[in-house]
Length: 257
Image (tube, rainbow, N blue to C red; front, side, top):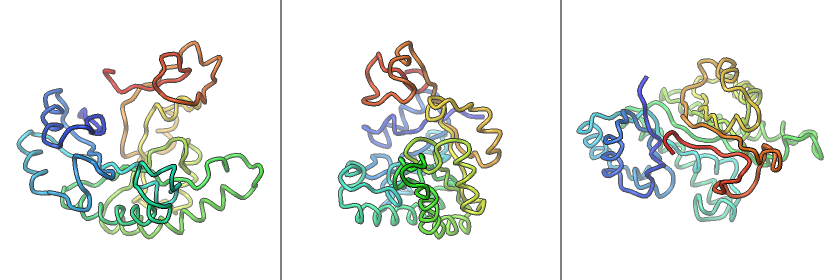
């Protein structure tokens, strides 16, 4: 096993400077952030030759590309609410996301990468409760299959895996919904999962049990820990608002922070 870094933590610096810092910290692999306006790679116009050259010179490896923001726009575009992901109407955001999802398949091949980390998205997360709509969640799964299946079939032919990061505001937000989503997509091998402990612990999910249940479907893992402090008795595990306050009932951290 090798220790890698999700380069979003270096999102404010250039690709070359990011690689320099990542190597300096002793990382061996990179999950390259590839969302809209990423400073590390432009999916629509990638400088593949330069990226591969710098990676080789620094003895690093790109293990996955991440489009967790862009990808969820394909199903869950919210217009003004997701405007900071990509500027445009809901329709324009969906169209952009579709282009990215197909284009990144070409880029992964050129970079010798097999895993794309992202989010399937969700039309309305409130449908997790069977009230007021008893069929809302099931309807969302049907729509998701109709929209996403052609993409996953394309990835299958290209030997690429889309690793959905399990978490809130997504159709797969815990162990049972991840298994449900895999079943909806007929367990196609091109759909896998990314485990981020901080996204699961706060709802009481045991990480080991989740990994055991999903088995080989887990193809990516984010090393992030979580902390419950004394104020959880006040705010509960679904603490809302900004993540920053020191007295927040639930917080998550990357190693070293």
